[in-house]
Image 1 (cartoon, rainbow, N blue to C red):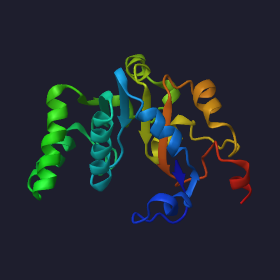
Image 2 (image 1 turned 60 degrees about the horizontal axis):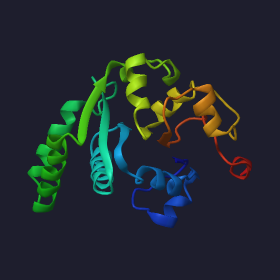
Image 3 (image 1 turned 135 degrees about the vertical axis):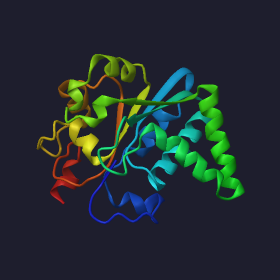
Image 4 (image 1 turned 90 degrees about the vertical axis):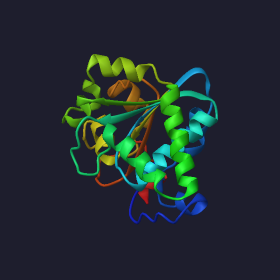
Amino acid sequence: SMSGGCVDGTMSGQAAKHTALVDDSERAADLLMSGGEGSQVVLVTDNCGLEFLSDLVLVDGLLRTGVAKVVLHCKDTPVFVSDVTPEDVSITLAWLEKQDDACGKFAQTVQGHIDSGRLEVFSHSFYTTSEFFPKLPLDLSELLAAAKVVVVKGDANYRRIVFDAHWDLDFPWQQLVAEVAQFPAPLLALRTCKSGVAAGIPKDCVEQ
């Protein structure tokens, strides 16, 4: 899903769809929530703060709907000050504990997922390099290949998937990911479009 132009965090539902250049939310939801024994979702994180809190809500929802395990992939050190690192998970949960009862209960739920092994926090030095995703190191590629779906967040990560190159805007996304980038697992990319690098946009939307 990519949004261009004005981004209003207060919008939801049908109103939010009008800012999306590509909206595969229904297909994404079906894939993410299909669950099953041994199913694993990898979430490549982006920013701390409200965005990461939203990530944790998503994680809890996935684990409640039948996904066996979620792995959070973080940077081992921040490139930008807002980048999520493993330490930010415990910092965020500790902050939630100091808020109201609902936040504290949610923090305990997430910690319970970690303690049970259903939520794993992982970091890899690749995420702080300038390499494109098609040059994934073997160990990381094998970890991603084990996932039912990989959710990659952020404009910079999106551009690393597509070589930061200017493709035809309507170049088929699935072909680009599977055949050109050779990504090792089904991929869901979430970004706010901050550059002209994009693919998979329907022709009618490109013409507009």
